[in-house]
Length: 275
Length: 291
Image (cartoon, rainbow over all chains, first blue to last red; front, side):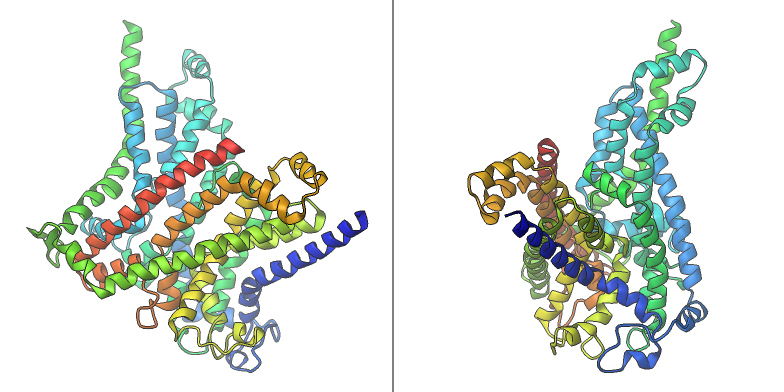
């Protein structure tokens, strides 16, 4: 019986590894194909392993496109956007959890209610708003619709609620105002949650596609997710530079992902990261 | 006296803290939502001005339009293929590795790695993999399918891409659910003589069903909103066979400048997703309850 179980487990493990390798094959292929020459793409049977490690496609991706600019745009939008998003959420959540004022719960639920209205169905009107504000082709325009994160606000409120109100009263007696209390006492106490949510926001804004496509016209203002789909080689067999660009995008997120795997898995188990 | 003064100051500060969030909620959610509804009931000019109130005329036109009905059908077709396949695949993987072992920790990482890839990169990779002449998929599985020239194969490329992108999260959710099933229950079932299948259907499946329902509802919502992968991978083709609701809304609203029609499609999407989000909230609550 025990022996049979052992064999069953080995078989199960091997089957899982086989499927796992199929699952990561697209990622492997992207890295591999980033080293293909134009002729490597048209051979039959199709190549799977790189013929060598020539940086040719990488050099071309940077030289022949605005890839570096795309990356810079995404970096600015994701960094600044996730920071503002966190600040807006922290302020609102802190106020509702720790301060007392009339209608606070109503106003908070009004904000949470936006969860019911999916951004994808609002793109036409939001585009008109952004264009009226003159924010087409601007970083603020790209990040605008991501600055409000109701789910995160909800989780932050739970976090702030767990801080005893006496802490704030003691701080107030010592002459520490609410804002300073928030920055130097409350936030450090919730470091782990804030970090997880911030990371999630960064990735969300970095990965977004439809909205930045709509609100940018100038090639220099494209984010990298939009930019790589417009590298312009797609119709020919010259995929090399596209795969070089894709690999450059995947590599850092893969490394961060592997480093933070435990935190991400824990975050999902706790319900902090959904969708 | 001093205390009440403090309270009053406090309350004003509270509103100030909420102000940025309230402004954003108004400008980017409630106001556009209201305008979308108004526009869907009006004739709107190319410059975005409401010219006349037309009642439900736009919806009547919409539901008698083949193109729209086609998008609606495609959206549901995608959901009907993607959701069950996705759940089956993720559940199968989770069942393979849920017992904690050294090799399983490695396998687990393989299954969640797609999470590190953004949608547009993933779609571009799949576009190359499914390319009928140079693509690796046809070669490795000895197929000769022209994936993007036929409607069902094109739909399936979207489904495969959808599963690949959803896998990391859904696999982890199911893994967590399977691991939270008390081992004593499984042992008890086995002592009673239940086989692996019986144990799964009688013990594990009922206990992970809240998680399944949760995944079902978030993926149903995602299916209703599908647009990005369509734009990058198939462009809605061939012959509009993969054109979805939000993609058509984009085409009508932006490419043709038909705001009333785009808004009417938007309202249909709202109604569809609203019901589904409610469902998701209910199952989310139950998921936490069970854990």
